[in-house]
Amino acid sequence: MDATYLQSFLSDSARKTTRSEIRELLELVTQPDVISLAGGMPAPDTFPTEELAELVPSMLRRHGGAALQYGPTEGDAQLREEVRRLTEEDGVTGLTTDRVAITTASQQGLDLCGRVFLTPGDAVVCGLPSYLGALGAFSACGARLAGVPVDDHGIRTDQLEQRLVDLRKSGVRPKLLYVVPDFQNPTGVTLSARRRNELLIIAAEFDLLVIEDSPYRKLRYIGESPPSLAALDSDGRVISLFTFSKILFPGLRLGWVVAAPEIISRLVTAKQPVDLCTSPLCQVVAREFLVAGKLPAVIDRTRTLYAAKRIAMLEALDRHFGGESGVRWTRPEGGMFVWVTLPEYVDARALLAKSLERKVAFVVGSAFHCDGSGTSTLRLNFSFPSIAQLDEGVRRLAEAFEDVRSEIGPRQREPATTEQRPLVVSGEHALDRLALTLALTEMVA
Ligand code: PMP
Image (tube, rainbow, N blue to C red; front, side, top):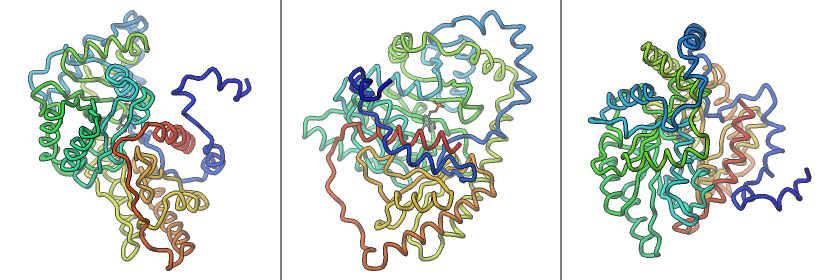
């Protein structure tokens, strides 16, 4: 099929997604000796392969009828009860089953929120930066995006309020506020307890529904967790998305959404034409795994491994970027990512080009900024590479940084001028970056 001919058949949303920049990049990153700090994948050594090899055959004999049949759109009743209990244990009191539905992992939860709440042109408020898959899901529904800066304590609630005031003055009333409160992808930062309360007050004041996307909450290596937004929500405006992807294995494609019954009912109705139901086979596997009490051991094992990898990455950064480099990075207490801020005069794309020459990949930070800002930032992943690769990868990254600096020369090392950015932007940039980054992270796996 000729690509130009195909173009005339495409929907507006598909036409906006280009893969033009990708080919060139792929040639570099698909080389087998590239160390990828780019992906967002769990380490395969955390997967419960042995436990599953034991569980699945007998499970099929006992529950084959249900596992191989279609199932209810809202999910297997007993699995819903299991995840309801898990969520209640995390501080969401009085949680009833009608407030829980199973999704085909959190990405589907994001997609369904887009389908249920967004008409093209509606505005969504999100962090600068934000998880690209969410920006992509909302943008595919024609959303406009309004970004609010994120610092070491999460989204800046003071600026959030001001932004909402400014948006109202210009006639824009966003419907949704999207946040990853725990160990955010991409920055690794956690929203402070104080800001969680402020965020909910602001959401009530400005009539926003809040999407709490929380894949990493249980992956805490140090410190204490603030309450989830689901636990703090007193007026049913929080929609919380949880997933087994990072605490069990992502191939399961299983998550759950917690929200007011009226919202759950809308999401379930929207889910029907998408997939009828989430794979019953996967749901029975998860259910039996949970019923057998095997989840806590997998989470413990994962935490132990990632805690060591987190230390390896932070120590490597201290070692190779310490001193006068002008490079700063977050020190997340959990999750899978560290966020690096380069001196303003260094463009992360130039660093990526030099890094790929040295066979190290990462994701440039501007990809996660809906307005294209963040040009001197980048995301590093520490869950997937080995400890040896983490150290070597950061060492090569530091060499690449020196290459870029020496090319820039002292005279040009002035901060870039900060241009005035619009209050709300179309999601096109997000869709474009999504295509590019998905390709990058898939291929360098
Ligand atoms: N939200 C966030 C913040 C993520 O980081 C990811 C995966 N990287 C997802 C949602 C989607 O995960 P899944 O669909 O596997 O649950």
